[in-house]
Image (cartoon, rainbow over all chains, first blue to last red; front, top):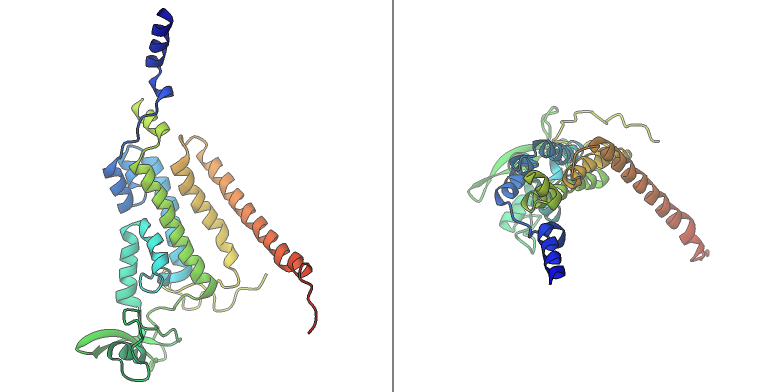
Length: 208
Length: 90
């Protein structure tokens, strides 16, 4: 009998080693980590770790943008890449919004054909697909009215110093730039999970 | 190593236009490995003691592993595969 009691007491004295605590979700930290890389860990009282996560994730993000230009993030033409990139947070959506609204340009004829189904470039079978974008050097952005709405299109440059709205990333540089930004998103996904479900060693340390 | 083209930085607008790195893309490996190690180690290490040593170590491991993988694939594609199916003139 006494031996049974002693075994029970020993088990009670060391509950951590016998039964692991169930992981508890830290929702505010998870949401903050999604809003800005590293912010979730800063909220959990680990600002240095949060800063390092932000440095790594945003370093990858901006290296990708610096290498591939704004075309590295494109929710319309590179949707699968964009799903991974979205985990960097709102900054990805802001850059994509700027890209789509202010810098993306379409070939005027192709866009007219896409929207009206007329001309040399008739409407494609999948009307929801984005119209092809001209990547010709020397193009310039213009706004033209089509079907009562104004669209930003590209036109051949009649001004020798006119610059294109942006140059399209091609081949390896475009692929690697998209990969860098997607890696940033995947890494931040790990950071979001770590902020949302604190790992045991760190939870134990914060208790002490 | 091919020389950098004259148009490398010509009329380049940072964060808008892509860099002309088509022949020099492999220089992206060190910064990629470094930033990846910085974020991954920050998440995974229980304590940040010895953090930068771990980051440098992981960066070196990634670079060596990718270079070794590239070399292995080169040997497989360029040396071994031509031996397996003998190339005969038509």
